[in-house]
Image (tube, rainbow, N blue to C red; front, side, top):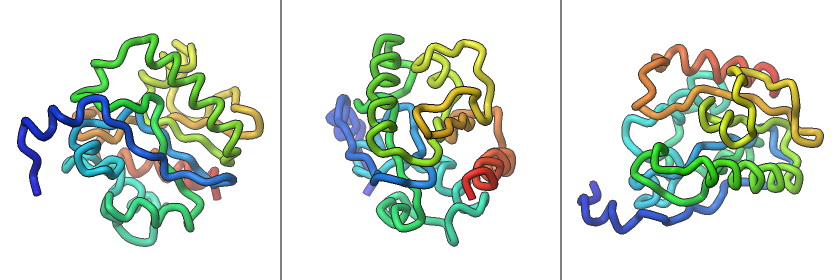
Length: 179
């Protein structure tokens, strides 16, 4: 069912539970949920988001999963969270303060869950949330406790800098590191 504009507006500020558990291989971290995602209750659910195809094309999943199958990631050692919990129409609506606060909360979450790798999906959000204005994509020089930190391109369909194939290549680089 496609939501109406009114239904989407009702989703402003909603949050989604993480798909996470202690000791994951990779905890993927989006910027924040979009309104379509908040409406469905499933991460990266908006049609056109390339997270699920990139996950499959890079070899993380044995087949293309639908957002409603997000819980099937846990047995694969994969999980999903966000830097900022509240849903917005676009990530541009988030304030710098929200990103910094979200980065601190994410750091605490990572320390508690101890995934092998945290993969932040979006270089601009990573730079703001972690105070790293010169950060580049890929493995970061500093981890969080024993967790490696890796930055991937944002898989949103709005990110025209990366084709689906190029996005899958970046995910595959992480998969090789994560084992």
